[in-house]
Length: 214
Image 1 (cartoon, one colour):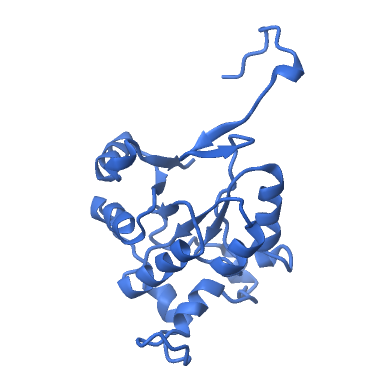
Image 2: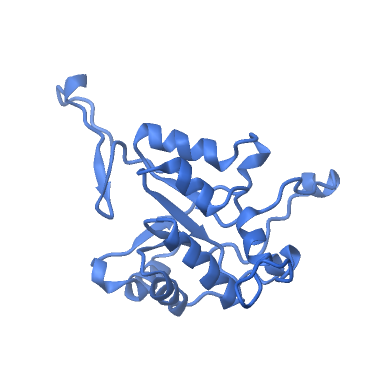
């Protein structure tokens, strides 16, 4: 809890810290949020620039409107994480994780608490349809088995329909094995799941990061 009766001057306050060895000016990082293009034409690129300016970490969602490469380009030397909505299709998982590694993501955020989409009555009433594409899904959809981009890959709706619903500790190990990056497990609520996740986490780091949801 914050302390106040400690006689501390403002000039003595320092919020800087480290996460995974990454120096941060603030202990607050940006959570992954999908489809930021709905809020502004620059979408995730503007958010990534903002996080670089404040000296903290941007997290790109699988369902972002900008590609991993685009985010990496605007981030420059500022670190970023990539959030994975895991698929039942391991070709997709391995393709998107390879993109994250190639373009310099420092960790993978694995979301484990979204087995189905939310029931959003307002969206149903308004017949809401996403007006923008999911850039990283589109990259995989354009990728053929031989690596060429011929437009013959799985359709976006097919990829979306293959979202993984049943998670096990082996999924944490799989994501780490494929990416070689630290894995942040997002969506833990129970102490029992926390213990399971810790046991499944990459042991060479000595710890596992978890995001506890409300």
